[in-house]
Image (cartoon, rainbow, N blue to C red):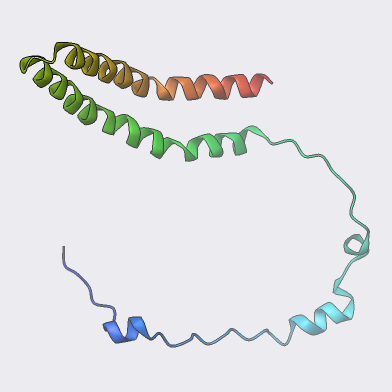
Length: 128
């Protein structure tokens, strides 16, 4: 993979302001010539809008990368914790070692169940 150069450091540190886009001369006369319809001129009314399933799916789907990251990182973290607990047992700190192994195991199981718990919460939210 080759690195591409897009400019110098001095160009990056002192950027030139970009030219602003000019407003088309056609849009202003169209608005002044009756482009606003009577529907636009009415006063706003309160409308209740229910959130459909597609938006809920997008919201839940946006958490998927975070949940996957946490579940994938739980295995190496639990391995280190269990190994540390085993070393504590080996050097004579049995209670602390077994406690560390137990909490690491329970934590690993709970993290692996996180997607299931999120689906359960999502199902409860749909029922309400």
